[in-house]
Image (tube, one colour):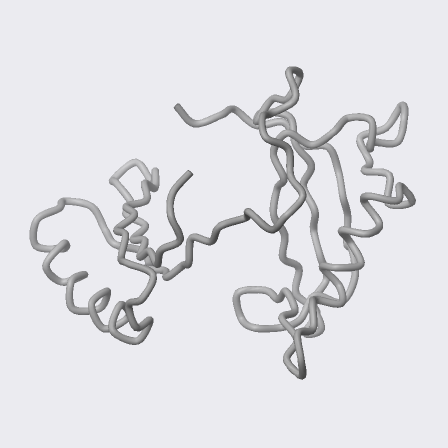
Length: 165
């Protein structure tokens, strides 16, 4: 398990349209603004030594999940290729989404590929995504990549995809 830290990613596309991601780590005490400045200045340097196209850069924070109630090891029947794709409508009318790998098939409506939104655990997760989490006076609420808040579930379906090696 990695220690908490800040990271920078670059997505780089090749001539076949395939995209690979580079992750560069920084200590947790670094100023995010400094990493953003580093990202912009360093993109030019990376561009000069690659043949692909830098599509984007991103910043993230690796956190310790020691305070969360999570399992210590994957269930024996878990598989990253089996998942669920959640699509969300946003306040601006757009659709955004993501896929959760190793989704529990017991939480799919029998005989369909639809996620059981009435399942207590699924509903708790959906409500957190819709409401966000307020700490003090500040709410962290999920959005699309343009900043438009998620407003409701567009769909939630079982999703199979090959794993990356």
